[in-house]
Length: 77
Image (cartoon, rainbow, N blue to C red):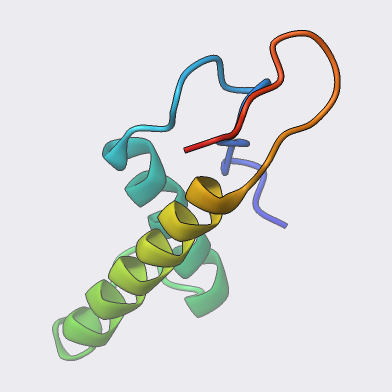
């Protein structure tokens, strides 16, 4: 979908994803889906709410994933 969104879970990412990395991925997703790199003033509030919602869903997903198999497998949080 959006090539600039990177995988944020181990083992691809050695450490836990930071809040900034999660927000950047959410922003890229909302930009791609909306078709706007930056929203017009009249769309800014809904755009930011969408980024916040996607970031929250992403953090929840990463916290709940269980990575199994291979060396160093651990519960992502």
